[in-house]
Length: 535
Image (cartoon, rainbow, N blue to C red):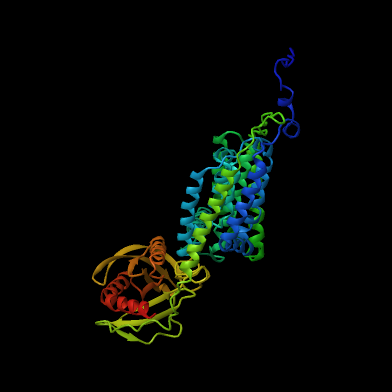
């Protein structure tokens, strides 16, 4: 065997330092750029002021971290970002801080997005915008060169935003479909209706805790950090992030199937109640540890890039005034958007005493509603009305919830405002979509949902929104219309309209709803405008 010696040419002046450990080199071979004497306090102070200016948004994020196990990881995301930056401090310290006014302009644009999110009461938009402003403050004060060097630590901050609830319905549907399919392939007869299914040993239902959204968010967050620290290749990083996204989804399907099978085979003595949750987290932990163990087999250790040697006293004195000016502009822009929101929010309309009475609807007569009449699960409205109307043996229900002076706790479009909750033991969702109807002599697209109860009773529900005189069935458009109305000084008066009919035949329910909507359009719009005018 031939052993070759590694020869280091004497003419290479810093050969020894390039073979040191990063920690040794960082302590012995670099001198921080003098511009950091002003730039470091400037960026720290700028970030603190931005958080202070938008403290309501920051506190709203923190409150979600505190009360939700799904997003509790938000508390450790900022410390992880600081640690990721700290570990490469030696290579950052020698770079000259250079301000960037282009980043200040981007900061201003993101600030406007924050304002729209607050006006429309869309928490996730305002929170993403706040994190983006914190990120853009770095290139604004320190420059793009430094920001590019810490791109991943900065972008990792986005994991602090409580985001993912929108995927709950889809993940629940996928879990239910896979579980039913697995049971049938196992030879177990299953009768399923939406998220509920019945097998010979009992009935099961898929609720929010079964969606797997907690597993998914935790896996993607930790998996992304693992990929950054373990691989140098962008391809390997992206592949591992994709795996960390797909694995928890499939693992949750398998978990749900195994829970039902354990319950079925044990006579409902195993994997039920608290055991259900414990089993789920143990199974998830095993899957994630296995995923990281397999991923570690292709690990590519990345050493910290060594900082160029700067001889003491040779660095050019930094021009600190522009960095301070850029920091001041950044703070002023943030303060401007905060002041704009304060101004708009103090233009409140007077509270509503009650919803305006409906005018008579041609051909339809109002009848007394039963004490246990079904009602959509909408909360914190300013006023509401609900009535039952009959014609030729058909009965149609109307529910209107009216909102004014909306905020984070009282808003029309919210994940907590639903037609039927997943805990409802009477009605199960079995279908839905959209359709176009005639309303107040104009075409209107509405959302449709079909529910089923015991005894083959079915209920067809149509739903749409009214915002400042505009009609829409889209949550996103309803939010956009609300933001525009508030920006233009018209207030945020909005209403959700729900019409519903119970029938043994779907066609009969659709016909009744179509006839009622066509006849009731003028009376409903008049009542909405009268309520809005009550100021």
